[in-house]
Length: 596
Image (cartoon, rainbow, N blue to C red; front, side):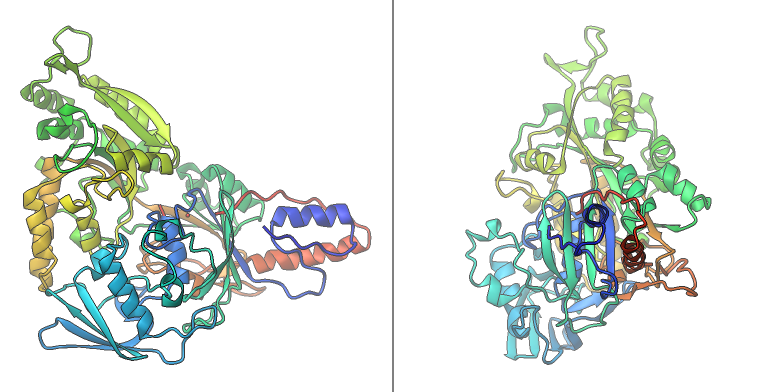
């Protein structure tokens, strides 16, 4: 991390202040950098768009990589991206996109239709996991530098929306398929409003405004993501003025902000379909792993679902900022949530759980409190994440399982280690969370048989190691159904299959609790309008619209927000004071980093 030092001002004091900011020090009278710092508790998995999978990865891709089309902050409507306009053929299989003229990548190389075609062709050929649900059925040609013709092999309900990330051909064509997994994507070539200029693993990622960006010029000159070990630590940094916004606000702190106990901070709770789940290793015969034999039985998986008190989890862990889980959430649009009769919803019913375990043949034969069958005990490996509310839910869930005769051996891992176990199928139960896209296809695709891990070095998104022929057939059907009403009905069928087969115990659908320094920022946006979060959204447009608050501006409220530039102005004033011999106290800044 680069640090520039001011010349000869109260050296100890100014130097300490520069260290606390962890960013270039400004001398009095110098132009202030409009910098927005976001605190996060999730470190980046990979900046390589063909590999990463966490929410923080997507947040950075959203503001550094172009897409043909984008999603409006207001209502998720398809809007222009790199493509200014598009027209479709009568059969809906072919779409012609007209690109903006004269646009460039951050390194000055032209951004043309060749980059789009290259991304589609290579992404399909190499099965890029973050692209395939969007482009898997597509072929593309480039009649000229500003025209892309996309043809789908089958009717595609997602078209004309194409918000897959476009990569720079002149960079990627130098990287072989064998070397691509080792590519760090830190070479500072961007096609979005910002470009990555500095990355320190486990601490921060710093982005600077991309002057070649074709869209709205952000007021922000820099965006920094800083990593903190705990949500409490990042909130303390925010109170101290070291950061401007945070994700993952603890519920007790969120309640205090809402109550007005932090006058310079505004809380925003938004929902975009995020949910937490207990994955159950169903040990699909087409996959790999060593899941407990009992979990192959649907009755046992259902029993686990009936043993969990979701209402209590929402109350104790979320402070009411969420709703009890039903099943996998396929879309950020709640209209696509599973509709099911209350009588069929999993609720806290240990008696029913025990009856199902009895029916499956797992009984406590020797009275030791642990069910067994054929000499095998119902003792499960339970892995949880070391972040967020995942660990907090563990004593509740393991206690409820013990009550019905299922014993657990708990291990806590960071996300990278846990992912490695999942990729090998070497677990019984583990906690994780998802934030779905807007179109349901990607989320639904993750639980097809094709996504069951078969190679530990490759892995797969199907973290229940679950396969179901009926689900696979319905997925293929919805994938080509262009009538939205008929498609929604198929999605409901898929969710019911998933629900009753029980590869997940979905714990809750939770609100994204975020906070912003409202004394510094204004004009922030939410997605969708009024009900969604500000950060870590589908298209992350907030960084283009948020502006520094200056004296006399109205506080952001709802869709507004404030800037590190304000803090730097204050620092400049303090430096001037230091010049005349008045000391000051420096604040220590934590380390920097996010997307679940």
